[in-house]
Image (tube, rainbow, N blue to C red; front, side):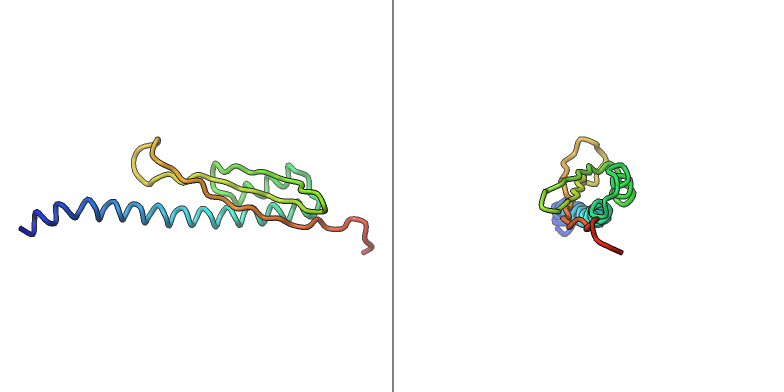
Length: 114
């Protein structure tokens, strides 16, 4: 009797465990995206060239992340980093969730005195 109940419950436990691992992985990638966006926004606000900003952002971003640099006007710049987190199972075409972060910063005043 217990064997039959275990046989029915075990697949559900495996599915819940895989989903929990996926959620933790997505949260970790989200934090990495925010950290990368923060670093990139800081560089962009300082007036660094887009190539340098992309390099700094990509160094901190998860592999394969998409990086977008934005000039919003009014002295504001933003860096957005997005990445996909796939279900942690053995096939490539499995479901994925896109997570990311966007940080807005104020540009530094280049006309001030030192």
